[in-house]
Image (cartoon, rainbow, N blue to C red; front, side):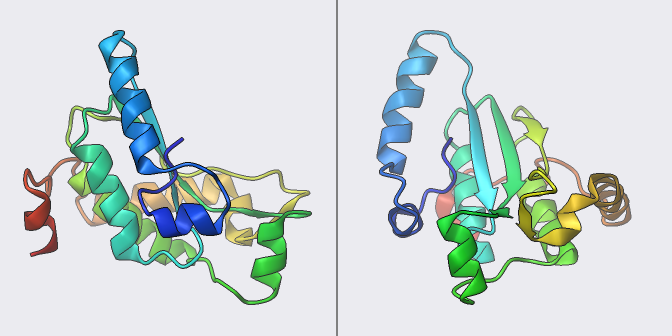
Length: 166
């Protein structure tokens, strides 16, 4: 799992990982002929939409076979729950999450397999966002938005990282 490319986020969540480790491991896996699937969590504490898209763009440009996109879930009994309850971060509503997904899909090249667009935490442990508990509603909303907005995978894929910010 990559989660994010941003060291400040990884450090604040005490993951003891970094993007450089991900690069080393994925290079070795590819050298051995093993397909790599990256897992990105959208909505991590203090990450902006731009930061999330930087992580997706990194995946788009690094020879990844597939990607799993998932919204952050706050589960009961975790340090994340304490921070959320203390108001240290907020989570996107469904509309904002879907708008972020739309951009993610557009910048991911067609050859990258998208394995997941959302996830769901165990309902009895889910603290936030509660709208994710109705997975059928979420998937229908994603599907409707993608059709309405004509979301096409790879339609905004850029070759140069600097073009991404223009």
